[in-house]
Image (cartoon, rainbow, N blue to C red; front, side, top):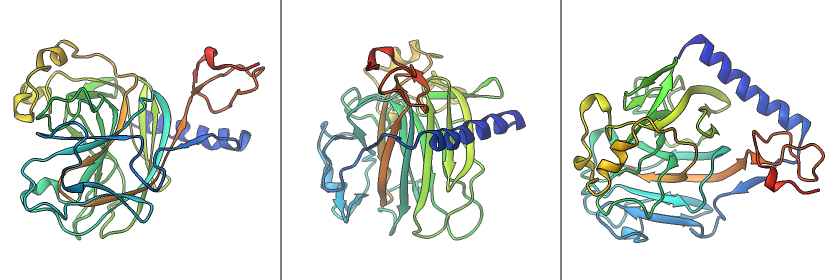
Length: 297
């Protein structure tokens, strides 16, 4: 990342601290009620919409747990669970931890590997055999008890991002985070500014910043060809290719199931869209996108 981008990311993150000091009434939304999966929709590759195969996604001890106790083999059962409301400008906060061992049949690169999909297509718009939604992935990686392995990287299924004023078609771009070994909890945040930029923060440190999330032509990497069929996309392939370069300004949030057990808790969101008129009763200093129709006088 260039020094200029690091500085911009620092200013952006610092501004949230200033806003919080000026206005303590931040209206955070809890995306998980702690008791069930109400508000979330599941789509697993090669299975019908809404089918929670072998109870992959469960609630235990006030956590969302992605488990594989009922499986014998992974068999490319890539799964995602989508929150039912799309968002545009927002701050997402959550804690995660990897636990246990990877399910037999998962790829070697999926050991202690999961993620949260941002600006994603909806669960219902996924094709039957589709492995991953068209989205921007906040990739979560756990340490392998040796060597460096960053977390809060960005991966781009069917998408691309801009860095240093150039579109970067690399499928995964590493952050500058520390490596987190073992089953420890890790706190992450994503500051999502519509189609302008995204900033990832781990344990209070800004670790990655990029601009202009967009549809990227190739499914995994435009440089590697249009490998859509390999990942279960046939019906909508031409549609997505025709949208190459289209900026993603909003979308759904989805938790990923990629063959290694992972737990999530404290999943909450601060919506940055709202009334920015100081004369309105519901004006908030932290809003970044003005929605005048929301103003109350």
